[in-house]
Length: 164
Image (cartoon, rainbow, N blue to C red; front, side, top):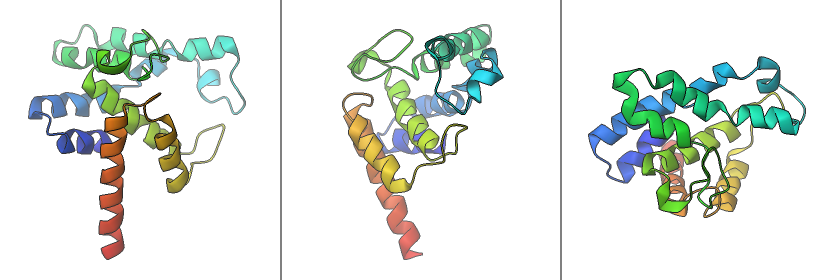
């Protein structure tokens, strides 16, 4: 959530959009409650069938929050947080500017957070490796403008930490 909000601040998004992004960042994976634990915690590679099951979680999440009036603004963010900038993501295969801006922010923040966290199938990546992965996915998986802004934020935070 903090990464997403920092990106939104740097982009000068209105407070209302930042607030929606906060909620979406917290709830974006709520649909995973509809995915079997054995699939989510699989220490080996996923089968095609298991991957298809995981790919349903944005739609499940959208369905979970659909009846909640307060959360209507974040429905597109929950649904589209796995869309790729080049159109190869899911569930709708949206590309470029057709992906809501806040969802494009969430994709970058979520990917970085996932890379920096231990997973059942791998240890957390180093800061340098995670940054290289963001750069590698810039323009294909990620909106290159969002990656650029996020890398500036990481650099500024790193410089602040070094000075302290």
